[in-house]
Image 1 (cartoon, rainbow over the protein chains, first blue to last red):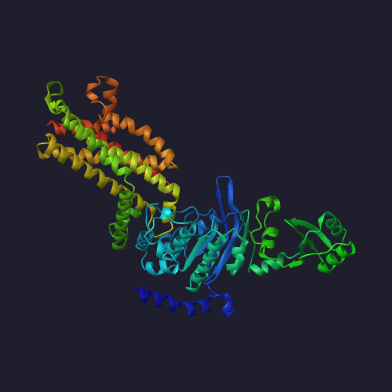
Image 2 (image 1 turned 90 degrees about the vertical axis):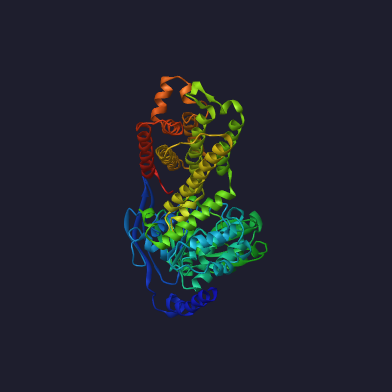
Length: 339
Length: 262
């Protein structure tokens, strides 16, 4: 039984992946989720103001935004858990509210703040959830492919954060979904567990599953997503491939070097090419235009100072994120996406 | 709505069966609820059964023993404990942890989890009642109902009381966002309910019209009256059964109206 399930999944992989991933065949794959002007308010608080986007079959689509930007409400509406106040949502050609039970068979959802009973074992949870679906995947195979074999007989309450997330991926995939919605999957994981989880998600896409990934980490979106919708204050502020978003935001060049002290800062500030100076630990980041590296190094040299560890930084999704979301609360943003 | 489809769809029936087994397993692994619902009345039964004075017929109690008067209260206790303490506690916990939320994105609606919990808890309470009756009659000389009619009244009373306590427990679970709130509400309901079931003192021994009037309209008071009658060969009349039915229906309807899955 396990071999047949395995071959079935593998048989799907290359053909479907080639046919559906937009970059691989140059054509546009069919849309599986279409949202137009979604709006949702809780009382007087507007969680989602106006969100529109289309997810195509086979892609990893990112929904990126700060906490409270309206990401989770958006996916709750896609999952049929909440009724939208306005706009239209179509998932696999169906209405998430009206065709809720049908879509629950075909869309695997892992939501934030969801859990299993503490005294339920991993293997039991997988068997139980498999029984909910019409044509479940092989739970044993999923457990081992997500590296949970050793934890099969452990209580859910005793699992580590990483193991819980793996189990939630297993449960999101146990019904052989066409779409998997994964909400803040790596929040609270250490960097190593996070990278493992990323590899797993890429593995899931290779099975032919379309993935909607909700995250507030730019690094995660940059690494995994084919396209990203930036959501801020309930609106989509940008939607493109991560590197394209980075280029859009690249309004200026940046040079990073070891700080040459207060005198160095003064020298750099007087340069016409320099527009801003920021300190990050021992480093100073200089933003400006023109031939910035040469200008900076030469100016310091003229002042009798040496420029150490000079690096130029390319614009990343992080820059787009900061540029395109509300800047009023910058202090709360950790620069996790920085390399 | 979804609960109704369990009976007709074989896959849904299978899934529901798995849920019941799973909930039973979890109950076994965290046996506090089991201990309270089964253990407490059993211990009380043994204690009172071992005191010679309580098992002698008393003229003041209408010719029955204190033990015989007390057993109906113990039978009700299991139902009160399960319905008003164990069930709301578990459900509020499931809601707070996100267990209901996790299920709400699967084809199995979280209402099934509720139904599975009720099934397991009721099975527990029923087992407790059988155990109490068996031990009481077999070891301590408890006088059981004699006629089929008396058994029927006893059974009907227990079923209706179960309906009332479960309904009230679900109302608690419906309005309590956290296990802490559920706990507080449970205490407010639990002690009066236990009191009117005669667990602390026989209600007819209190000689207060306020108390006896309240006992007539509260579910455990009515439950005790009907059970006591069935166990001592009298007719309880229709009134306590109607009171119980009203509570069972009213509380269940209120619970369904109040319940939120998140």
